[in-house]
Length: 392
Image (cartoon, one colour):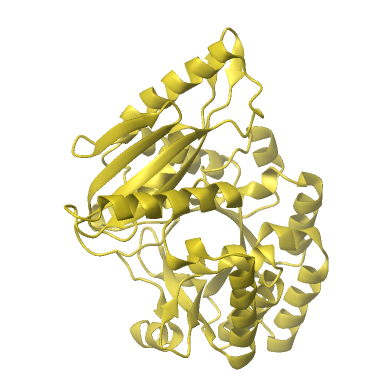
């Protein structure tokens, strides 16, 4: 997204959680709550207009950074996480959103509206909170199969690369390791980030060979780095439903002679929602092998303290949507404090993502956070540049 551009969004109240089974009185209440909560989401400089009882058009102005839209969408999700209680009954609120950039505010509103509608349709189809318009929004199953074929070829031809974003000690700001993040270098010299292909890869099961490649590549890199450094690799929750991950991790560690504790497997909080027993059992087995387990994007899911108590993990990563605004929002600051204290009470380390300036880094250090990660230290870097920057 270009600097200082406006974004048009369509936010729609969905009754997908309740199957449309509410009576008209409850439905009217939900619509009123929907509009009321949206007023708490938009900023003073933004514009919004009710299109019908269930859909609102918003114009988010001055979205200057690439991550601001994602943060706005994360805030939208948090606002609607809480159910509304009506006559003693909890009425869940579910929304979907579609966004599109307004390139020329005077001429492109109608075009942006069409594009946001396509993105909203894609979000609902994929059961995601939101989607941002791209050419992919107009693609169908045939195009997805073509993308999968390209991904399989990319894996075979070595077009996928791991970039590394540093993780540093909160107190000393010394290098502790990195998170490995996938990038796709196409023959057309484009560098494509995972948000453009991971969802499709998961639906068509290409995520399996891609993840095995990422684990093996990261472990091979660890063998070349100093022994005190670690690497974190993201693992799709669906891959925890089978035993192959155990052999892939063990074989990679054995081949390269890397200590298991240097490999950190990151999984999202959604593991505590579906197939809990199976997933928690797999995490326990991976941890028994000596690898470290981290819960990524903590605070954005629906887990309860009961699940948290039984988690076989070593580390909690506070989602960047809380970290980036913790010095401006008392609620976000309270969440950050609570997660740090809760994790430490369970003898878990805490990583804060989204650290963008020294003020946030210092505040997190004072709160007792263990590890920091974010653009204040470095963006994800190709391995050659990472090695050069950190003298590896």
